[in-house]
Amino acid sequence: MRFTSEQRHDDGVLARDFSLGDIPGTLWTPRTTPAPLILMAHNNGLPRSDARLVARARYTAGVHGYAVASVDGPGSGDRPGPAAVERAGADLRRAMQAGEPVDEILETLVGALVDAAVPDWTATVDALLRLPEIDGPVGFTGWAALGIRLAVAEPRIAALGLFAGGHVPRAQREHARQVTVPLLLLLQWDDEGNPRQRALDLFDAFGSTEKTLHANRGGHLGTPAFELEDTCRFLDRHLR
Amino acid sequence: MRFTSEQRHDDGVLARDFSLGDIPGTLWTPRTTPAPLILMAHNNGLPRSDARLVARARYTAGVHGYAVASVDGPGSGDRPGPAAVERAGADLRRAMQAGEPVDEILETLVGALVDAAVPDWTATVDALLRLPEIDGPVGFTGWAALGIRLAVAEPRIAALGLFAGGHVPRAQREHARQVTVPLLLLLQWDDEGNPRQRALDLFDAFGSTEKTLHANRGGHLGTPAFELEDTCRFLDRHLR
Image 1 (tube, helix red, strand yellow):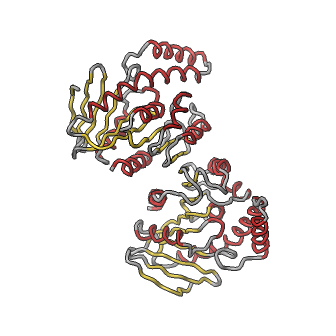
Image 2: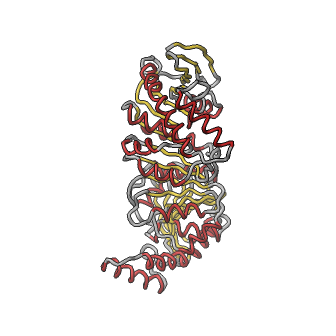
Image 3: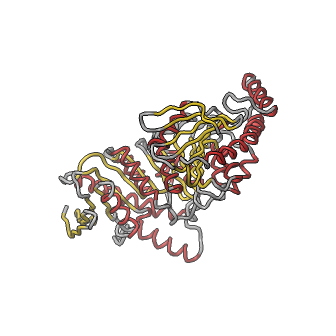
């Protein structure tokens, strides 16, 4: 793991880009270390440089004292993806322009993105847990389909805070039954692109003894600001 | 309004029983006053002396600094009710002993309890807001059917924290469309006596621009302790 840039913010958070082989990532560490690690990813492979993700990472590190990491997996952000991702991405653009249904294309695209991302995120956890700034249990927040897969594959993940605002392929909806760690699922009640019933069925499927659903009125981008604090309080209950 | 008993607790909370005409009630006030008022009631007319309600009132006053009040309306707690309540209560006991369906009997019973309770709660708000210990906006937590009716009838109520764990008659489910104040609806995902879909439909019906649903795995009595703190934080956002 090689750090390629470093920026110290007023709130004491140190933001560093890193490379791990060909995996590009960012690590935000709080003033006081060592700290537990939160993996943070946008739904559907959106880039780790997205302003909303950066704001969440800064808050989680600066106010709640976690180390936060995000990486762009193959096909996520600007990073080129495997053939299956590129093909499905082209199909998606074509279908959206033609106004055709995209559900089955998203099924293929998000499935391929998750398949490609899992080894990179696992390798990143291995590398990050060797840093002196990080110790303790690991949490995950954000991209639901990836979080489900990581939680099943990765016993070090002890809490999942997921946003039911992206497409969750059938395979991951099945995997949800195997998830047993504490879960907070966040849902926008009027999310245009994500059927409400599918999100409620996903919540129902999780095997976790402790699982909580937060649903708020409004569309995909309308999640109230207080939910970020609620997610951090959820993490505090399980990682501190 | 006449105070009939007084108890000072270690956390600074002063608990006083009162009578307002024939309405029996309890007022919990925090160390620092004046404070905003929270009306707190159990679903289905359970008594204000119930240990779970008392614990919630003590926490809300002691930790979050609210004045909290609860009254037993006609037919609630030990207080005798009007004929319609007594008749439906007898029908309910008979049906439960016989293992017969109770949904329509609850419809009648809870409807009659709410009808009887509304004037008492409104008179209590009038009297309490004249006390020097209380000022500011009013919140309501607990009994969903009563909270909906009070929020429609009583413009001083500025925030509603409801537990979807009691029977909500059809009339109140219709009234929910007229509720526009901020709302937190709490739901137990596996509540034996309260159909999940009915609670989700109730959440959907509320007219409030800001409305949040919290659902937790588990049965009727399994609400996690952290939800009390979440309810108080919701009240803080709207009443402070």
